[in-house]
Length: 165
Image 1: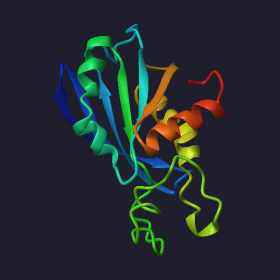
Image 2: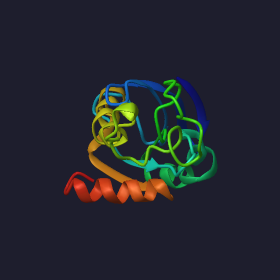
Image 3: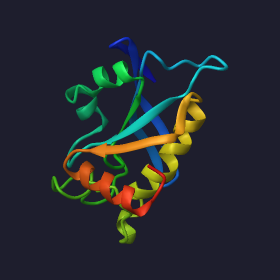
Image 4: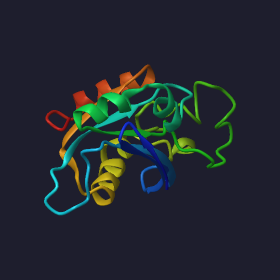
């Protein structure tokens, strides 16, 4: 994991294992200044920011500016990658709108794309990892947002999971 100070908080970048995607997934996490690991420290809410087509976890981390708002309001922000990468699936990088960078936050139904299980990753693996890794992120107070493909993903995941987000 790589860490940088930003707006009084900490931007963490790294990878974690995903059973759904069958590989390590890149993720960035912004921890606001109000976040603390000490026992009795109040947990902070979290927003999962889903990026658009062809993006990585770095796009919104570097370009959105959401960290300034999150620092002011005591909100953690998680920036997951948009698809599995480096699996060597034939054709995974041939077009910009299918394969690498194009997970669409759903589970693929064709066996060739069995590792493109972004719905399961976002709704299961990522929250489990966050809860285990950052004990003072309040996993009962999770919001979803996104842009482009990520906006669609945020809406469909929200609608399929009433009361979770």
